[in-house]
Image 1 (cartoon, rainbow over the protein chains, first blue to last red):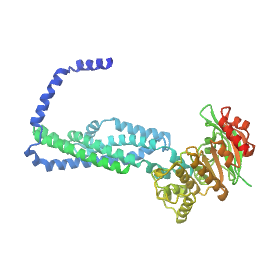
Image 2 (image 1 turned 180 degrees about the vertical axis):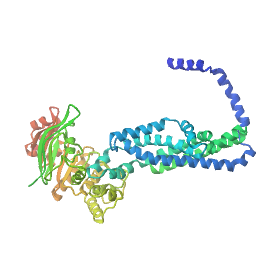
Image 3 (image 1 turned 90 degrees about the vertical axis):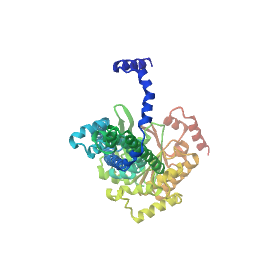
Image 4 (image 1 turned 45 degrees about the vertical axis):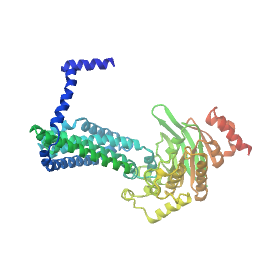
Length: 245
Length: 262
């Protein structure tokens, strides 16, 4: 505890952060938000354009998550200690997943900007790479957790490796995997906004554009649509989870 | 009677210094009901799994149906395993699938990978599976998901899955260790029935000495990876149980006493 306090205090001195000033400026920030950051009548004229961009972003996020899931499924089957073919492949697929997962989505977007420029593809691949890394890791956990028992039983009947995977491992782990994919889609829609600012596409770009034009009313409408769409998606994915689990 | 299974000088070593089995020798005749008893960690499960090569032996030889299993390659190993059904303590079913789907898994060993994946089962295979489920009193549960069944029912599904293989030998790894006495008795009765009416050889790992004494044609006692008893139940005495289980086995000895008193 003492160490923690010392570290915080050291950091405050190092970054010249004034705690008193920081906290006292919160009320004025709220005041600014209330007086500027609300959707006005004129901003609703931009709504169709915003919704169009929002749809583009959501679809990109969904496409990146689902395609990443397909790749993650293969890698996780090779990576899980229960279904692995051999140790080398297992270590390799775990390593690839770790590499993709541990580079942040924003970093991926900036790296990929060099290859794809300011296009939807950049954002798509940035989301895809991170989702792939994350889902591979999650699926490996799912497969490990499903356990060896039915694998052992099918092996004992003389079933071949592809049969064991498709008849026992996959049926037992699909609900958890779908749950992870839904979670990934939610996360990706949030990240897609940030990635959009960097790559100049989708809803993130709309926000950036209105914000930098000092059109705070429309920018706030963009934020509002993002929040609403995320809430709807969360509700939908919770419903799907309830049905399949 | 012909010898179905012959285990000769089998040893199994885990790592550097854990000897799970050392120089195990025994044979099983066709149609016999043999129980393997012994304390936890004595090597019972390892021994059972060496027979269908779920575990590879370190040295020694196992002959099943006049064929050595030790050197079998992938394809021959699959063929061997189709002839040996296996039943597990925790049933090892795919819980999210229906009873009939689980039972049909017993046929996978006979299929090409393609046919197996697409569940292309023949009509008579399905009829046989339904027939077996009726035999085991599960005709009302055929389309139920396995996670809705009780422990005893799950184990019967496990038995049905093993029987659809048309096995010559049934390996049962502590089939009643997770069941209550009622369900346990039912399962053991079914196993005995199967052995007698279908002529299938049954090799069963057991914890309960009294159950072994009641159902077996022969009992094999394992202790510390070695066979210390291999004879009919009638020859079992308190001293012999002591050599299998060590000195802390009073209630087990009481069970044997009951048997002898009858």
